[in-house]
Length: 354
Image 1 (cartoon, rainbow, N blue to C red):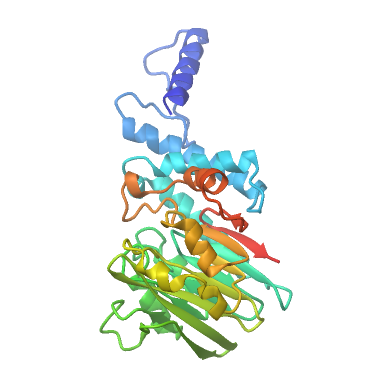
Image 2: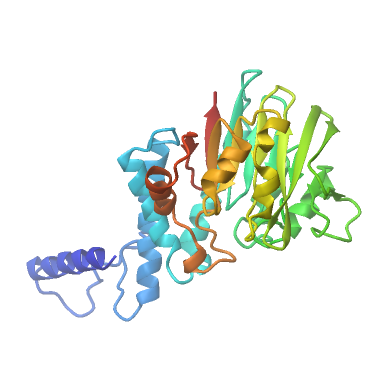
C-alpha cells in the first residue's frame, strides 16, 4: 500500500512539474467531477483509503469476472483475491462505502444468476455469499446455510429479501452473530421458508425447527418441490452447540456445511472419526478455512469437493481473526495434507459441481 501511495505521489509530482503555471482559482486537475478516484487527499487519509478501495475493488471485480472459480488457481485470480484481502484488512472496512458497494454489487450479481433457469437434472451450483452464507442450487431446489447480512447492515434488506425468494429451506449451524440474521429469519417466516437450527438460535421462536440430537440423526423434510434427507451431526464450536448439516437433495447430490466446527479438547473428533461410513457420500462440503485439525475433519467427512468459507468476515471479527484468501491458498497448497480438491470463492461467485 505504501508503494502504491509513493507511486501516486511521484506521478503527481511529475505532472505538476510538467504542467504550465496557472492561477490560484484554476480547478484542481486531480479532482474531476463524476470521477470517484481523483480527489485532493492532503490531510484526508481516510478519504484516500476509501477511494483507493473503490479503485482496487473495481479492478479486482473485473479480474474475478474474467477468471471465475475453478479447481486450478490462476495467478491473476489469486492477485485479485489478495486485493480484496488488502481492502478488507483496513481498520474499519465495515464503514467503508467502497466495501459495502462492492458487496451489494456482488449480491446483485448472484440475484441476476438466480433469475436464470438452471439446466440439467443432476446439476449442482454452489454460490458463495457473505462469510459462511452458501446456497446449494439444483434444477428444482435451493438450500441455504448460514445466510447472513448482519441484519441489513452489510447486505441491504432489499437484496436479502430477494435472495430469500429463491431459497426453499435454510439451515443455521450455531448461535453466533456472523452466522444468524434476524432480518433473514423474518423474511423466511413471511415467505414460508422453513428454518432448521440448534436449540439456542431464535430460542423462543416456535416457527423455527429446533434440532439438537445427542447422537447423529437422520430425518426427511418434505418441501413443495421435493423431499430432502437431512443428517445432522451434533458438533461444537468449543462450548457452543454447532450442528453439521449433511443434506441429500432430490437429484441425489449430497451437500454439507460444517459451520464453525471445532472442539478444543478434541472430543468431537473422537466420535466423528470415520463418520462418513455412516453417511451418504458427500459431494460438496462447505468448510471453514480456519478450522483446527483440518486434515482430520476432512478425513472424517470424506467429501469429494471442499468449498472454503469464513474468509474476510468483517462484521464481527477484528483483523487478527479475519482470515484472508491468501492464508487459505497458502495453507491448502503448503500446510494441509488432504488431497481432496478445493475451490475458493469470494462474495458473489458460484461454481458448478460436476
